Length: 124
Image 1 (tube, rainbow, N blue to C red):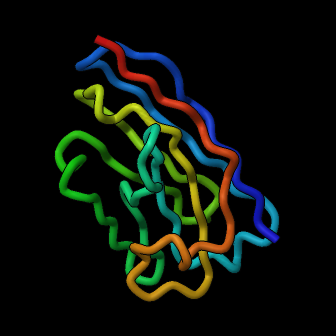
Image 2 (cartoon, helix red, strand yellow):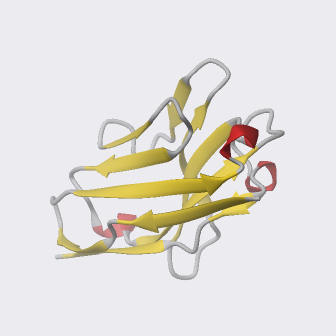
């Protein structure tokens, strides 16, 4: 079993920055990929960024490219999401996810373990 705990969410003004953290514990040796997803009010949960540990590749979706940066440690114990130039459309609950058997690592079903989420609110 893997436990994930997110932190770092909060209220920020448009154009501001936040850094989210996700701490993993338990059987972290099982993890081969981790990701940040978000779910805005009235919308489906969507991928924000993900890391694939087999080759260290990190991917960001187009809507956050150049503004958000995902990073992680080599021990698979922590991942982070640095968010700059935040906009109102970034308001959402952000979830950390971890998986063992992914392929594209872009879909929710590829992640078996989920955190409880941390809320980010961007106000003007």
